Image (cartoon, rainbow, N blue to C red):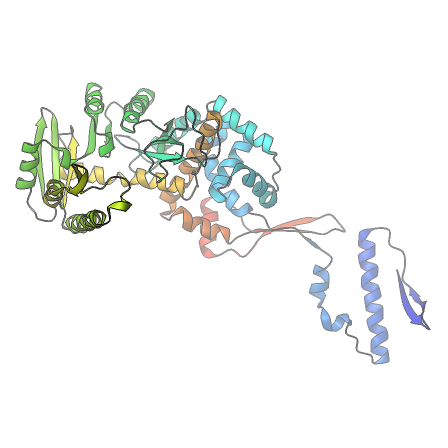
Length: 489
């Protein structure tokens, strides 16, 4: 390391400072050279644009000697890792699967994008082959069944000691593909993608929305036919002989309800009041008081009842929806060339269409009314309605899987990978739902808090020492870390 001076176009050695044999010695010699130049300039009274006294503080010069690695997403990862362990999922003994589950929470994306994120943000290097091999293993080794066993055990120990009420619902997940196969079939799409191949997914949750059971059916499977196999499987696995099953009107079929009764199970399902026999329909619309909160009980058959309630708020909405449908039907009649599909208040008449006045009148009579069919006759009307009203928990769980966890669209083609993908989603859903119950905060809000905290990694190249620190921790994030027993210094 030498200080040179250019004289008449030639370099002249002013001072030889020494020879560096290590990186630390090189850094020290550079600092000595800079100090030497500053001393000469001070003696000569020269102020240079490159004078380190005016450009950098001692702190900055010290920082220049260090290596700052890219920030990591470790805080959020460690937070959800705690709950992965707490729910007992480490029983799977699969680190790759764990990372896929946690990545699904923190950065839901395709498997290729997940692999890049794990490497870039957590320094976890997996090849795509390793990830797909893990998914194949998850399917072959029955990870989903193991997880269902674990979540049931956890739920009964920590959330709902006596699972006597279970909520059941169905959704569809579509594929960005035009090529159906045995599993992926076009069907009634809840995503508004009727022309896309899809699968049907069922989910059963507790009264708190904690998932217990998930199954996959072919896309053209009628959702009412998924109900009974899943319930019988749950009852058989866990001996839930006193179970009350709550589901929406789509599950209401004579076969399903009779099968539940044969197995001595109770049910509460939504009723399609518009499809009631004429005599019963007349009784319902005539005998149900149009007073907010009013309920009436009707006997359907021995051991089975129909509860009908009236809500003023629902009546306003029903009336608004009916008027919009009528306006839409009239517009279609005035513009017949744009007709596509079926409309609620239109009917075929000869070669054309006309308003379905009978349906319009039926809609008017049903404004504000909601029906519930049950064989739990020992429950009061209020208890039956309250239990059914909690069905939104499973609907919310589906929304979480589709939005927060981005379970759709699905890009995997083989059944084993489809099942494995949804097993990852199921595990992630169990974790985030428990965290929501524990904190009384939405998962979106929690991730927003955690995302503000990063892990900063600093390396001293001279000594090889590495220091890891979390960026600024707020009171909210500190409380979350304390909840997960994470020490942040």
